[in-house]
Length: 211
Image (cartoon, rainbow, N blue to C red; front, side):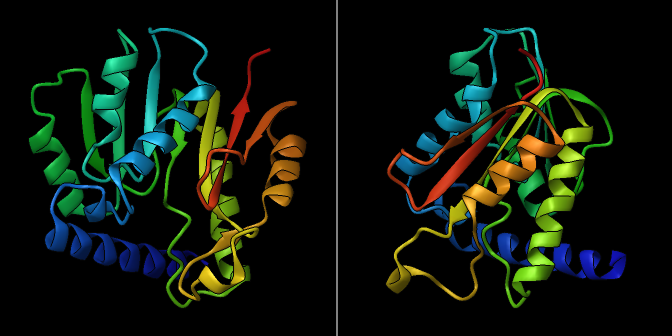
C-alpha cells in the first residue's frame, strides 16, 4: 500500500505541475473551472472555523496558495501552512506570498504538525487510472490523517456521485456524500455538516470537534 500511495502521489504531483506550467497561477492552473467557483469552495470550507482569529490552519493540497488571500480578507491573527506534493506549486506559492510572515508552504503529502483546523480542497477529484476501491482507501486514509492533525475540526470537498451521468468523466472520482457523512459522524465527531446546496457538482463536509 505504501508503494502504491507513493506512485499515486507522484502522478498527482506531475499532473498539477503540468497544469501550472500550462495555465500559470490561476484557477485553471489548479484544475478549477473558474475563480468564482474557487471562491465559492473557500466560502464552504471556512464555515468550519468558528472564530474571527487566533487559530492555526493546515491546507492540504494548497496549490499556488489561492486560499491565503481569501483567509486574510476574512480573519485576523492566524497562522497558515500549505502543503502540496508538487514542488512547482509550492515554489509558486512561496513567491506569491513572500510578504506573509505568518504563512509557509511545504512540499509534503501530510502535515507533520497539529493545527486547529485542516482543509483538503480538490485533492480527491482526479484519480487517474485508479479503481474506486483504491481511491476510496486513499481518501479515507487522508481523512484519518486530517482528523489526527486537527484539534478543532477539518473540512474537505469531493465531486458528488449525484452528478449528471452524461457529464461524469472516467478519470475523476465521484464520492457518495451520504457514505462519507456517515463515516465522519461515526469516526470523528458528533458535529458533522454536509453541504450540498451551493450549485457545483460537488459537496463539502465540515467536521467540528467543538460543541
